[in-house]
Image 1 (cartoon, rainbow, N blue to C red):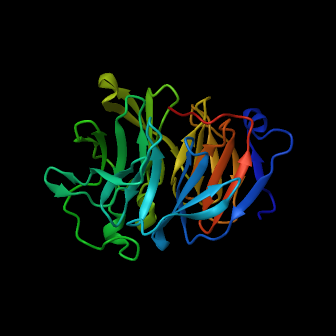
Image 2 (tube, rainbow, N blue to C red):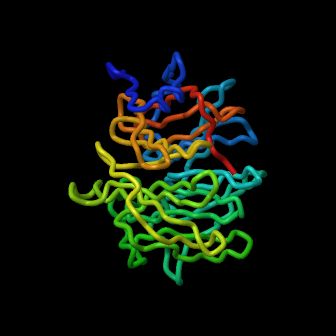
Length: 303
């Protein structure tokens, strides 16, 4: 563990940590932990161990077990309003929903008649619409992707209406769109750009957009924050609008104004996180080979 687990840059982060914060190791059985998502319906956590082509499950009662294998190299996961698990498939080049009976339904695998490249991360808005990013990592990283030349000419952010299957391109102005989250009131959408993974001078920032057109579109982009070290991978938002961002040194926490207020250090690069447990006050962190938890004095935002 790092010599200094926590860095406090503002009183508001000290309040979030509370008087005796404790970062707990839950498992070190991953090759790369991604897609961390709390499933309230079942009171368990799912975590994509995507290089091992599986989704794992963790619960306080049963610990770690295999949830789905093979997973078509599932990456980002979320839940919809009915508590069904939605997954982005890197190798499968699709977004799928696991129904309550365990069957899988494909929600999106094409745009304008061409296959998606490698859906990466995903979020569901309160109106039921599904928003996901589609960078080209599946092409660039054949070990866990597919290696096929992209059929899409751009890396995009998409929106899907699940009732009709309608898919629209919401934004194309990214190098490699990755993590995404809405502000608690859904007036702002945050999207990470991780182009730096394939070039030091490429983007490693989070963009913020105003949500417009009745919640169906975004506008007025601006850089919310630039991440050092490495890139902003997955992130979550609490009810106060603070962003908990996975980065090269763990979790970096920014307030709604984009100010860095504190850090939770992990021994390995962090890839994704999720608030969970019945009160949504526990932050679960996937950090390369390990899974961690920390109870905080804040509550994760949710639908």
